[in-house]
Amino acid sequence: MAWSDLLAAIGLAAMIEGILYAAFPDATKRAMQAFLAMPVPARRRIALWIAAAGLLLLWAVRG
Image 1 (spheres, rainbow, N blue to C red):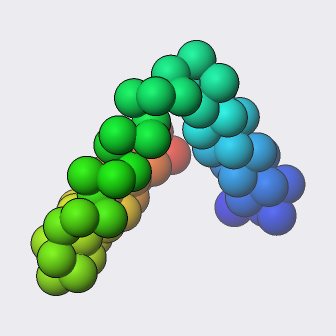
Image 2 (image 1 turned 180 degrees about the horizontal axis):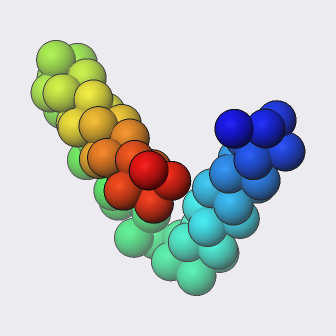
């Protein structure tokens, strides 16, 4: 994996996140508030599951 791949992935993630914030600002705010209302261990578990799903997707696409 080259540095350009990492930068492209970060750019794509930022673009998708920005589009979601622009298209659904109220829903995004509610989702963030709900997430922050959760206890820290629950937030940590969710974050780890998302990271694992991303790793699995990356493995499936890149091999």
